[in-house]
Image 1 (spheres, one colour):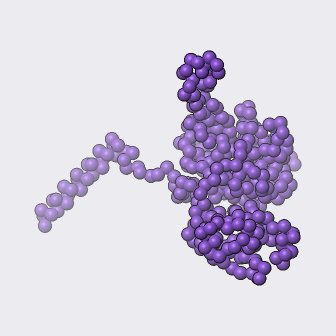
Image 2 (cartoon, one colour; image 1 turned 120 degrees about the horizontal axis):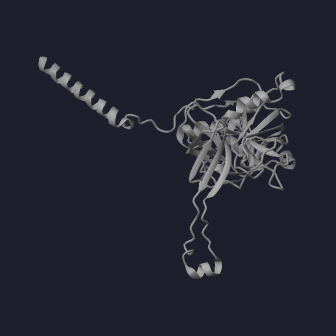
Image 3 (cartoon, one colour; image 1 turned 45 degrees about the vertical axis):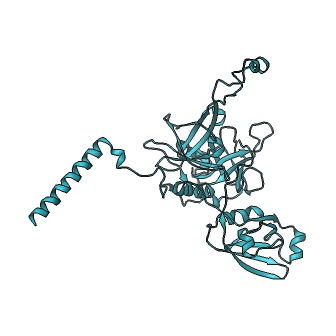
Length: 385
């Protein structure tokens, strides 16, 4: 018994000594936490997006003061691409020096959404960048790491390793109404952080050809190049959206700007931080908005449902029995009235987990269980500001 106790004591002593040596010389060996985490600590507010009584006297001072510190400028650079023929003297004689000597620079904005250093911005701001620098409103600078991107919503998540970060409070973008006052905060044209004011001009803007999944907040608050990835906040300074694009014939603001709602941005943030990517459902159909004439022929209310014009052979929908000419009115209990809503509802499904679709055919209404597959990531449709 005494011998066993001696062996045990010696083993514990050796292990403690090894731990002490590793902790002293190689502490990183003991810290194997991944860069991402399963839970993102954020500040969320239950305060409705309504004007407070102080706006008449203080304007938007309090909202700008609350939100501005958490809005950052983002500088990106990309190494110039070398032309393999540039060294040929005959090529240079006829075409000149085709090798750019300076790296390509980009400019945008971002929003700090977590004390852990996570920053929301647009994918097109940091796309293909070799180096990303984040500049805080207090003057601090830091290199940023790309945690993940989602080109189909044009969102990206960055991370910086800084202490005592100012964090914006996430608001409830679903509670916005047309006419609500909002502020756009960003770094337009690189002049420095700028706050502009306006109202919510429209909600649920789709079919703009900007992203695959569109559900934009439209605002007349001035948004210009460099504002992309910045914050759209309510009168309480709570984040309502990520400024993404403008409609412009001149390149500058014409009073029509678009922001991705916080509800969409939060779901993308959680998915990327948890899994490193956004996983979406897919059923393999070609949908089309239901016209009043088609709705009348099917005997259903106009504006309710989406007609299926094509079904991918051997896809999830085909295997479940969906046919061309079917009208899908709801997906997993979520009503759909247009193609954008159908895409969003299907994308929200969990691949491999059956969901019920309400379908209208000429011979009546039926319910079909479809097991969605995993949607492959599609390229971004076009350039944004």
